[in-house]
Length: 394
Picture 1: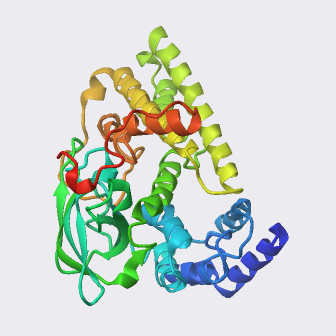
Picture 2: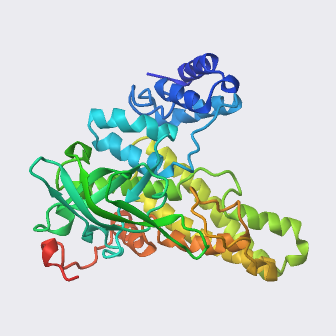
Picture 3: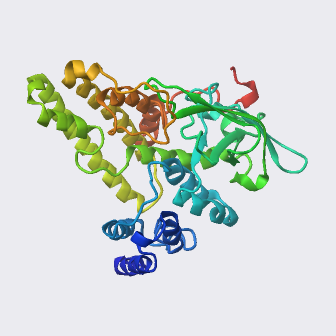
């Protein structure tokens, strides 16, 4: 079994063969992947060594100390946190070897074609259709929405309805979609922040080879659960230092601007600081649990906490700054590659955090998941579970 000492030896060998100061960034990242040091818990040949997931921290610490470049994980978060674990779980060997390396190095950015304007929070009611041709390929038509990074993505994870004659959860198939194919149109969705990091995507007669299907035909909902569980962990369970994230800027303002302080704001800040620290430590425990298995419904609870805390903390920061909190730095229409909560002003954090209770699963849906799968409460009464999708009221 690969242990910490062996990983340090392999990392030292990587650094000796590819000194960060004299190696192009992409060349170093490719060499790291090929050495099995990208994600050590993945299989050999796929960026890993089959080592315990907890040992990734050993490699990361050694590389950081040596000044080695990282793969800019915030820019490629959808690929790393959602596409990669799903491809690993359900992909063929050919798919794994084709997609995982450029995904991890950041050469190919991924986006997620799940949500639809006609399905709302009921993802399983999606209407994008994939019809199999006589040659065995698929022709896809439909519309997706709230698609982060679609404007810079090369690939997408896509779910589409392949059988309208069965109940909605059973007629879905999962595909890997080339965003450069004819028939893909990406339109920006300008948000309340002024930016358009989200997009709507129109899919018109897009042909997808059957070799880009992930999992069995009609089994897409099961495959999508792997994606969704990993998405919630990626959003709510991210690694942060103490006072990392939204609590950091408001805490600094409190220390540096004593003239803004009031007793009421002090009490609220203390409460939110403690809750943010408890959430950070809980996220660390969740990541440790992942070492022993796949993410479960606990990720939904962490994502709920993430959204609530971000919105409450950003609201407190605007109040603390008084008239300054009403200012906004730049309404220029931009299409950023990532969300930077702490790199902008208080107004941006306040407005952007409103989306936290929608993206990655709405708060209402996640509350149901926690109630049913964590607390074991009776599920809500449903009348559509055994009805063919084509017969549902829309």
